[in-house]
View (cartoon, rainbow over the protein chains, first blue to last red):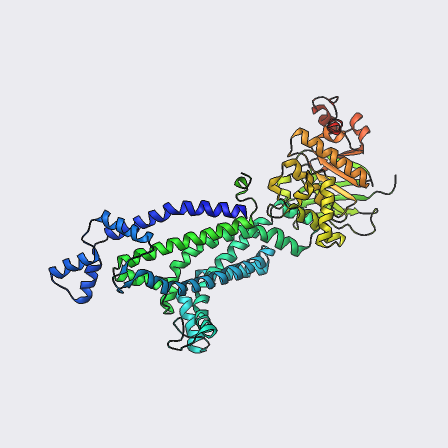
Length: 329
Length: 265
């Protein structure tokens, strides 16, 4: 437990400059792009006179200097104030709090599906590298990985929602159903089956292939020969000696994939019309909503940092060699 | 002398297709006497490690095996782990880095002695004591990277003999270790074999190391067995040119024996 604590403390401290760079970088990047929220707003109005433009800029604080606005923004962030969304005319924090859970459910379930089923099938394939089962699974997973997620999503909708009518075509829950408690959870889960499958099955292939490769490598290790020389049961060699070691890079992969999935969810959320975080980002960009977009990027960065911290802790728990140097000090 | 533990007759091990076969072992006849210590000597690629793998039935599936290994000393065909224990060269690589020492020493006993995990853990504790690991109770829950090379090799030896095999094959068990640790490991193997009445096959390229404690010596060169016999005879009156060459290559045959030095320490 001591190792995990040390690790957590170190990671939290080192993530502060990362966050600061993300904030300043985002701020400058949006500043460098031509046009601002007032331009986008006027476009939606169909134009306006110079007086209105100046008035709007002043009310949003856009007439201030860059440095001043940056300082104001960071100061507000420290009070957990992410600002005011121009496009939605609501606090950014409220919008994110409303949309983020949908995406977290989608991503979490898809990651769980991809990781568990992927590593399980990877163990099956890697138990006998080069066997018929191995080759079938490897080719199958490669085919799956080559499929774009929006296409898989559309096919799933056509087959299971339109033709078979087993699942809803879109949305996160039945609109105005008035369901509460467990009934609502079940309703959301039912709505999530297809999008989770679309997102999860593609990443499943990645975990499967990684597990399989890791196991093929582990089979060549000396300790596997030593385990065989001691006449251990095949099942034990496969699971405890080979798969157990091949699992380590998979956990690292899990952290990297979390970030990629955040991006991938934009597509799947669009296909399934899920009001999620990814769609919110898309809407923020098209509305030239700088406060919202900055907020989204910062929350994403925090999310990725947290996921990677969890992954590091899991890795330390799985690999006794990690952080053993500091443990004694 | 009783019936041999193992009789190797016309054993050849080769790899590759018919037109381009390469022999790892060629036409080997050798008896392994029960309760004695046989040193198998040869340089890299002489086939001595292949012999170890063949005895334990661990040759890769693509190996082509001719000839036979009979086990008149056993009532049944040998089972790796239960009848034959093996120790390998690299003590760092022999142990799984992510499993505890306790689990790795105990798992052989669970498999072959029918112990449950709790009983196997106390069996492992006794084994770690026997191979002289300091603080064996703490070692049960520790991981391989927390031990030195010599200690890891002791742990590997404990794991190898966990199911009380009658034959212990040590394939260059000291080559990756420094001189002092080398002597300690050899002394430990010598003790264990003596105590338990085990048969030892000690594979090495170091004829001086082998001469210290072997009863019998078999010399391999380029996949063939070139000389075999009681240690005394082979060392003092070698018949094959290669054995003579090996003996001549030793710096000084009168250097103090390694084991004696270690026993005092």
